[in-house]
Image (tube, rainbow, N blue to C red):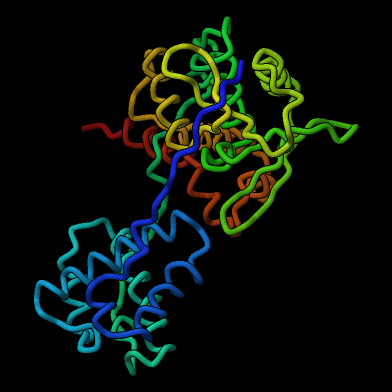
Length: 321
């Protein structure tokens, strides 16, 4: 049973430009709006860049540095003082470069003070996401009680994460129309990062998981634009008409990991690592795994290859000290 839930009113915290921007006049405020709402189409990037720029502007304000008087020295000093990982520090620097580019374009400042500041040098050899093994993934799926619609929903979500290697954010965006029959096979259509839309075939057991959920939930004939995976009303096991967010799904996976007595360090992304690592371990060509993962660069796919770590462990165990 699906129960309608009143829509929440959302208010953006970026409706008002930061004080330093507002003090510079209409051109700076226009550049701020253009930077936040015009250039940043991805909501996660928008949130992260806005946070980075706001943090830097607060730093400047505490030192009584006006926006038009920011120099590379200020940016470099701020950058040196960030107690973040190299990747996060470089994200902050990228946000500042883009922001000041807009100020240059709108003739608020003459030169971009962040353009000449060098970022952190680092090289990622292997992804940091904890790997879930194939036996652990099987244990997780088998542990779910599917005697009710919530269990069927959760099994279908985890099944999609395992059998398509999709990101949890893409799974959260699925609508009912994104699970469809092409006459020859069932497919899922995902809206991925950078505006990519990808169609991934659904294997027979995953098709059964999704179909069981849709049938029990009674939403197989709902409007095409409705969310595929719905939230519940507390612990009533009744579905609402509202879609689950990626945060909802991440929390659900954590609960299911706990119920299955699996390590809590694992996450939804660990299921993606499991799928891609398993394919690479079976000597599936890197290009094929890259296509499944939706990576533009094969070097990104190689970050999911944990085989060399196992070799390293075998080597160090042989040291005769």
